[in-house]
Length: 189
Image (cartoon, rainbow, N blue to C red; front, side):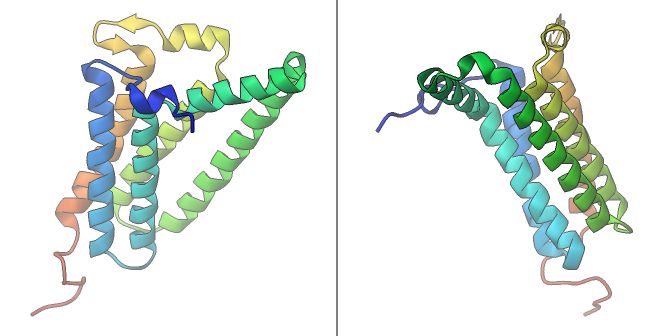
């Protein structure tokens, strides 16, 4: 069995990428814990958010999309359709965009009428989804803009951290205002 290089050596190094990984982990854990304190649609939202955040954190460190790209590039060359890869890339991006839009609309309906921390977290998740789509599109001029080095790191990392900060704000507010474990809203001992 061949083990992808990303499983052996971490892809992102430096303080800021690790800050993002830790932020995703904390947000995922807190979202899961908030979900255990809630019921109904809100519980569903927090558990879905926890899964999304965990997946983003794992991908952030292991760079799974690069492994997928390398594998698909190898398959395309082996099968002889590498020259026509742009059509497949456009189809993939269209599918990703459509899936993201459908998932975002579904989540927006799920959280309609729920507490403010849910809405803040959803806003951060939607910003992360937009960021992921921009990164997946990989237009050359966009890559140059997102790769611009700023005093605190590359632009794409700062955009990701800002969206993650919005998510963390919502999750922490929800954690602080969620009913205590074993107590449901309206329950008085």
